[in-house]
Length: 242
Image (cartoon, rainbow, N blue to C red; front, side):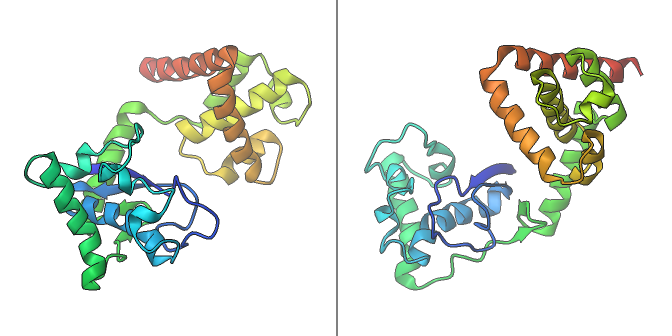
C-alpha cells in the first residue's frame, strides 16, 4: 500500500543533510507495507546520527516522545505507525521503542532508505505501480495546456494577455500573474522554463515566487480564492465539453 510521508518539517539549522533530508521540506511516497517503519525510525534516529542528541527522545524538535506518550502533541497521529505492531497500545509503544532504540544498542544499520527517483521509497515494482496510479489520477483530474490556462485566467481576472506578460505594480495584474503561476504549475505538465515566457520573464524562480504568493493569498483573500476556484471550474467544464 502507498503512504505519503512528509519529512523535514521540524529540522533546525545544522541538521543532517543526507539524501532524504537534503531540503527543509520533502514529501515522499512510501511503500507502507515494507518501508514505513524504517522511514519512521530514520526520522527519529537522524538527530542521534547527526550528533544533535544522545537519544532520539532528547531532541526537542522530534515527535518521538509523543509516540512514547511522554508528552502530548495533538499534531501527531500515532495510529498508523503503532498499528504496525500487535497488542494493546502499551505493548505497541514498547515494541516500537524497541524497534527504534534497539537498533542503536545493537549497532545496526538504520540509515539506508531506498529513495528512488527522489520521490519514492520502495522497490522497483512499487515505483512502477505508484507511477501507474499517478497516470490514472491525471486522466481523472485532467491536465491542461498553457494557452487554455492563460485564456481562463484572463477571462476571470480581466487581465489582458499582454498585461500578464508585464511585471507591473498594479494589484490587478499582480493578482493575475500569481494566479496564472499557481494554476500553470498545479494543472499543467509544463516545466518552470516553459511557463516563464508567458510572464515575460527568463528566470524560473519568478514562477516559484508567484506560486508561493498565490498560496498565501489563497488562505487570506476571499476574492482571490473565488477567482482561483472559478478558473479551475472553467478548465474542468471545457474539458468535459471537449
